[in-house]
Amino acid sequence: MEKVRKILLLLCVTPMLLSAKTLEEYVDAANNGDAEAQFHLGKHYAAMGDTIHEATVVGHRNGKTNTSRWTFRKKGQGSPMNDTIAFEWYEKSANQGYVLAQVELGFCYMYGLGVGQDCAKALGYYHKAAEQNNAIAQGHLGKSYYYGIGMTSGNDSIALCWYRRAAENGDVSSMTRVGDCYWSGYGVPKNDSIAVHWYKKAAENGDGFAMGRVGDCYWGGRGVPKSDSIAMHWYKKAAEKGNGHAMNRLGYFYSMGIGVQKDDSIAFHYYKKSTKNFFDYGRTFLILGDCYKSGRGVDKDYVKAAEMYREAALQNNAEAQYKLGVCYFDGFAYPKDYAEAVEWWRKAAEQGYPKAQYELGMSYLKGRGVAPDVSKGKYWVKKAANRGNRSAIHFCKKKGW
Image: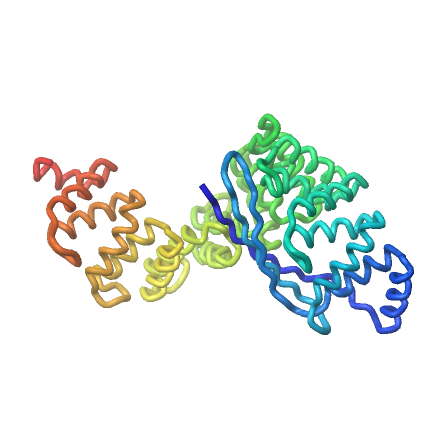
């Protein structure tokens, strides 16, 4: 089964634009075969302009095909960027063995920047740079073997080998990946203590994702003694780095008074902030909807509550779909609309949400928002009862179902 991951990368390219005089000097040197000058010319052209580039990368892992759709937004200066010219200079430099150019050329081939996408060639250049002990290339190889990019299947053991080499050479993101491998048992037996070691090493080098992982370790007591206060410390550091998962955890900590005095206002602040950086958007928008509805940490606002439920429902969150249906059924923030309520309850019911199954069944039985159908009504009410919904259980007993 294909899984699609959509990823947005904002590449704030380190300014490499050269002055006219310096550019002329680099061009002369590059045309005379100077590999370093050729590389810097490539960086110069890659850093120009402001453009968006999209690429699709297919990987094979555990018998499944995973498609990642990458969107790069390159922000630079000057005239429009020319990735093709950048690629040409990288290629000249890389073919002379210049390691930094080999890394950039591999990246160009991987994502089709200035050249047709060719993951196999990308791996070839990554290998050349990695064998020269380039940590960035080693990290790229680790990722490629983990996801099975440019090959028939991923290989966790080889991925870990490259991640470890990159980590030992100072690549911070690879330190985190080594931690992940030990945390989850990818290519190596699970070992929480070793995972924590690598997460801390990456965190101490400024990796926001790793900081969040360290927080998880202390909160769950995995590899370290459980400590809510230390978890809070690391989540705050991670949040400052833009880690949405950590922001979400902070929202939960403040809402429940875990390791800190309970404060619904601060909890709301972190939950709202995490919607821009957290992968579980649906769950977070659902929480925000509940906050607006009840006035927990924010002024009551039924319209905003419904808006949050809708955002969560569109992310396929079953509970939010049910609550959005209730909004339409009760005329809460929207005009009453039984048909619309039924459609949202149906979506939630098909995901196994018991309350929605019960309401959908009763809608069929009573003909609210849908044509009456006793058979379908009985089907959905019984499903809700089988999943423990008390109203459904009571109704089935009353009917002798």
